[in-house]
Image (tube, rainbow, N blue to C red; front, side):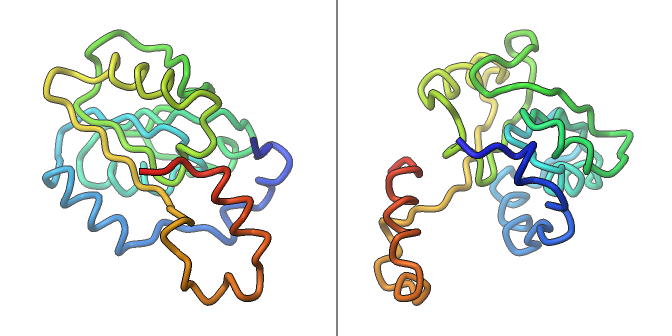
Length: 159
């Protein structure tokens, strides 16, 4: 598992939310407003902040203090330093949960999904956005970094 307390220094300088991805997330969540949303593996809060800007309240769960320290101030985003495997909130708490490019960092995927499910309200929505290197066999970067794809295929869970 990557240690973002070490490699996350200056993360926000080079990483921003992709607005095309955000628009699709917002659409798939059925254009939420006035919802309580959990962002698991929130990083520096780029997607959490965009959802908060749409009149939602967010809880951003992030294991790296370095990443949390880089998060911008937003009165509609509450930060929890923690892991997907043990979310310190009550049952049936969130209207929806997002995991944006984070599930490959979960220590135990099954335990994490069960924990997320526990925290969702009845008929709550879980949206997972991930990368599937196994589907990128013709991606041009593979020609330049073939070893990266071998590592990613082992790291990212399949469908």
